[in-house]
Length: 260
Image 1: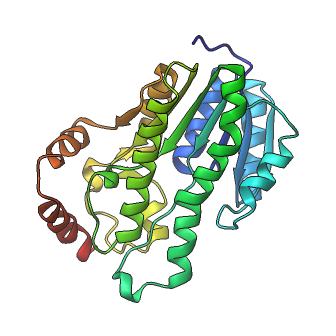
Image 2 (image 1 turned 180 degrees about the vertical axis):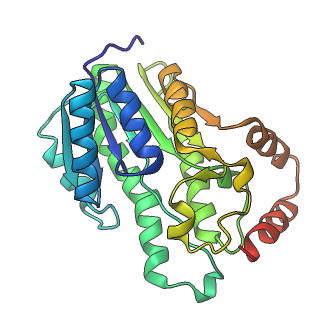
């Protein structure tokens, strides 16, 4: 499937970090954008920048994906506009013992990381299949490859994203539509701060920048690759984890996460 400039990309969580950098990559290549996130001022600032620099159409839809009907509201605001690229980037994590975690924050995490991603994919995919053209990227994580004590719900949510994406990629093979799971390791974004991780310096020396992750994910999406792990060390870790007992993998994550 050859891609031509002027197609339209819908990107969730587009106001900061990887989502923001992905928006710029799409705009750089001449694609029009529909950007959605909770922060209207950040979205409008980014939209103005991309319009001025790349001369593409950029629309803003302000929605909080922790609200159950947000994906349907986004879909309705598209007004039957064909979506050529769907990037399910929105997501967040929390840190700490599960038994002490605020219940609503855990449920909201599942809503954003899993339910909204699945809901939007289900709404957008049929149109892509009907046109026999389209690409979907779901942002997972290296965390998808192992259990994560002290970040149990986050790790589990990303395992779902990876499994769902790889299954869907196989299911629709040959349809003209592709699905890519992007699995970054440690990345320099606001994730750690929002998750309540005290020691944000842990692993910072090996962390990728958000633009590095976005570039790898964008290239993999355009190739139609089913999944991609960013960085050599992360690729090695993802490969090695397949051969470890799950209890050992959990112990490794426990040691890393407990004192963060």
